[in-house]
Image 1: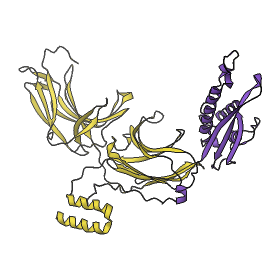
Image 2: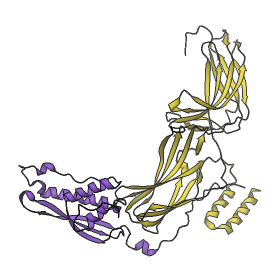
Image 3: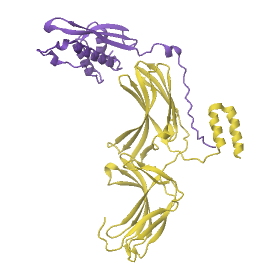
Image 4: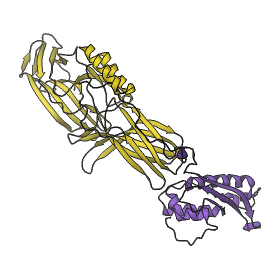
Length: 332
Length: 160
């Protein structure tokens, strides 16, 4: 809103105290571009300064109050008018009055709860941002600064494998197995497909990763499916008794953690879709949900310790135990 | 206690394959040939039949080898039965070529050699696509078409 302003005008901007040291993370915007934003975790304090710069020196700025807010909100694209705020904090920086010169205000939101991960999807967006506002009678001056929040988890205590026998009576029987049901975003899916009965002419087999974004509740539920990955695991016709290995590295794909019923507004879930295609292009498939989670970056141990763990893979435990205890001694 | 940063990507254990399974004949053997077109009859009552020969080891078919003679309208009958009774999307037949059946053509119409060859290839593709479909294999009409001497149009439709 810009009127002819004969009075004073001002610029407002927000700067974080730890802008030099805080990490930034890439996040997709609604139109598909990637931008970098400051990365925060649940419970971290958000503190900084609000700079109000007067445009016309010498003139005074009349205002109805200056404040800064920390907001976490969910925006459904089909219902843009309604923002669902699940976090809303405010700090008043200045009471209504006049500003004679440019000023800087300190603010701190201590140990802010950030329960959900930032998400920009096909039909819904969850974002966190700081908004500094100078209230005025006719038009407010405000500035928003988006931040990105990641939710971290640790290795789950229970992480059973997925193993199932499926098929079409008398035509095709397979047993598929995936080594875990919960994978972190840089994990590897290790599995196998075992053929028990093959009476159709299979041409090839692939495994797809499907992301399903669900918005809405009750009868107005809408699912948006997106195939994130297609990975061929077999080319040619298998026979009974054949085992086909699966090794799918997840780090190569853009995925988010599984989000279930976030604030009762939306879900983002991931499925592995095993697809067999026969010579007449007929498709036989089996879909299975997996849970994705985000692992925190760990502090690097010494190289010898890492090498000892790696050698365990190839040499067997006896010599590796020796190597591990040797490495631990070296560390100390 | 440190977490390993090297992911374990070793293959899962699997049962070794039986050598007779690995090198024996596959369980999905199914071959159908449509060949030897013969035009029977004279004048306006002519029609062409084709030999439909099937070889298979699928247990759902009663005969491991069969050989029957069928004409284009028999293929049409099969397509209609499957479209009505089964849930599958039936592939298309080669064209009916009604234009070729009109009089005053310069050629042999539907008895032209090149046309018969085109039709034969199309029928072969059609029957192979159908016979390999797990749902079509359950239909009585398919078995009757492939393995019975003649098609009984008054049969009782149903599943095998």
